[in-house]
Picture 1: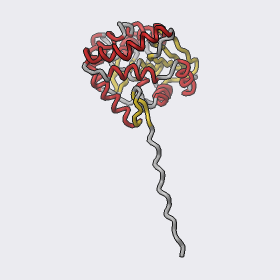
Picture 2: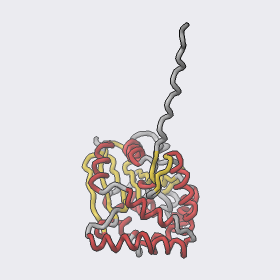
Picture 3: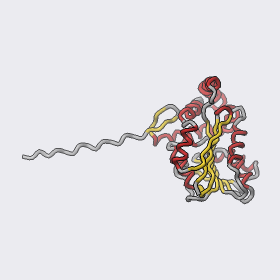
Picture 4: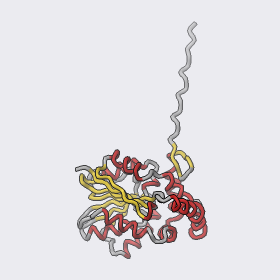
Length: 261
């Protein structure tokens, strides 16, 4: 009598994990959590940026966009564009014939951008698109420049977002990313750590009503690759002439690259 052996039960695939700050969470959950995080702070986003960076985010963004060397008539995508600071700077440089597509997954942030774009008299140059940076809803090779300011580190799959920015660029198109990093001087880094993990969340609680959102910020910065590693990732994605420049002792870094012709 033959004993038939039942097939062993299939092993479940291990669930893909991601980081939300220092916490390991299922990758599928990160997008929803980040969306909730930005919904909570959208109304105070610009105010808090200015307070917490002591106004430094303005010159950082200006220097970053100037680095691109935009020309009149250029078509630009501002990925994770939030409340339009980079879009406004790019819109001015791209001129009347230029177009900037402010691309963000969060509707509250896009709504916060509209009055700012209007006050800058750029309504005819800036377009709003709500969408996922890991699946950019534009065809290949459409843009002269793709930029992202302080947004890439919030993606669940950062490499996917960078690859999408590469895809939508024309050959010879320029890439720019402005992101936080860690100070280079050890004494300044200690000071920055104290500020980030104690004063920043406290300010978040008192001024924006959320301590958690402003604890996520310094944690996400610590989990983000250092400049040398991010440069390697950009080259792997396909960018050439990859370079980076540290600002304010390395608190922020401008990354640039070009899509091969």
